[in-house]
Length: 455
Image (tube, rainbow, N blue to C red; front, side, top):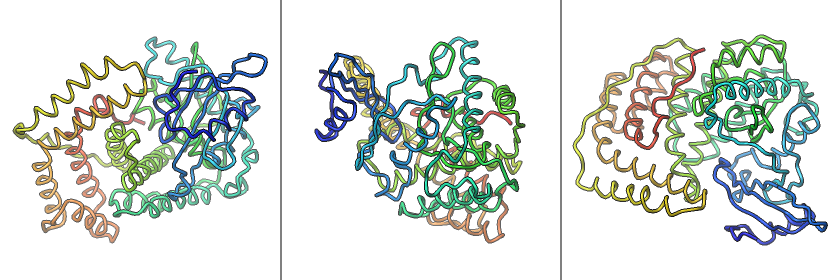
């Protein structure tokens, strides 16, 4: 058996064996999995059959961090879709106390961006939209969760979802985030005036969270943010994930959904839920920053965290029909220790990664490289960007704040009090994020220039 068990406790491995009814002959941690660990497991039964399984594991119980999105809760969504037209992995077992799910391993690839043939890209994307329509047809009563009631009105369900996320944000501790405060207030005040339909919403749905093979979707994955709500919530998530992995023409995909569902997509509702989707991602990032896990994918979190803060500002600007001002980059001289960052990056690129065979190690090495790139460029640009941010805040507020955080907090407070228009607030945020993007551009790669598809 391959010895790559990492820090999995013997008791957890014993549970896997007992649940599957055999002996573990192969186990390997895989890259990805988001907040959860992803493990490939092969189990041999008494008759010699090899069972290809998949273990999702969260060693830090989310409930203890005030995060309700546990693996135990996620299992209810997989079971709700079992034996339906929605392809999901079959659940083999849910650990009674640990946050662990053992499921069958479904064939297919997850990275939509790796498809090079355009016909295949369209085929997979179109098939996914068909499946999303099937998901929204599944009887919501199949979801047996005490906090999710199909008879609840849609607007109340949306308000409940916002309250859930505000609780996650407030309970995370740390300083208040002015951007989150602004967006929370806006989504509360602007819940769409519609009564239905109420469907099972996957949440965080779209490219990267399904498997595909031979031009078709083989499984829908990652249901941790599922809830009852508006189907447009999922459509908004598709547009959000399509920024990370471009998903062919979004209007064609919405047309696919309309044909499969028999309903018409309301783009204004998509715009609202796009704000809400980005708000939830930013809240998750804020929680991770308040309670950092030093062994998490920190290098990936940096560019994606900034990307979604920018997308939250752009989603608000889009729904409010506001044009944003993006400043030019600041100029700065190289620092005396810049060569040390470059030396570390070259050694990761030319020595560590080429000599590594473990995909997980390679991924984390690249994440370390992103951290180093950010630190190198922050050394060069941070002071000048801070001065520009303070200049912007002084213009908006009429006086110069002591810090950017303090000034931005006052800016949002005065807007919510009706003193400063939203246009000015979003312009300041956009310019601040442009500065952070300059510091992270090398680490972000193509993500630095990605934006929403135009609706």
